[in-house]
Length: 248
Image (cartoon, rainbow, N blue to C red; front, top):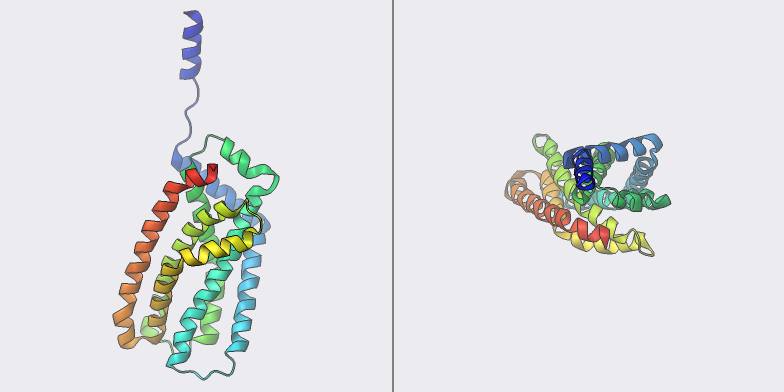
């Protein structure tokens, strides 16, 4: 009886596990602190984005400004975002893999959903920070001459909706490919087909913003509704599947 009472007392006196919100905040702060201390991923993404803009500038240097030119620019902007995001997503879990950090995190009593949300939000923050620097530069060189002033600010909305989906889906896929050989190629092979519906909707909304007029009114809202629906469905699916993926 004495042993049973002591055991029950020890269990009762054991500190309660932190809430999922607390776990999320600690993991997010860890990722942000680590990146802002080294700036390895952010610098790589910014440099890559600038190089892509330079290459696109050379490729379009002889193109004449026209409606067809603006239709192409909307797609090229998302080419820049997707491939810059892939670079960051590849690096986000490479650091966790080093020195067994990921295994140590999985051994801790941490909710797997909190790990996913913290990593997805940190990836989203890094993607948005790069976009704050790269997108205005892209806009200035390729689209500022003909974008209607009254609709230019609305280009922020498809960028935000698309970035949320890229960060959520990319976090799940980067977890799947972190232990594979040639993980950089594998992530791209999985990522591009999965985000194609989101990419198509965001390119449509961005192009509508560039063109303005009747094209904007007919396309922008429908494209954003499709992109937002994709975000909700895919991020919920990724959150539900993450426990299975990370422990498989």
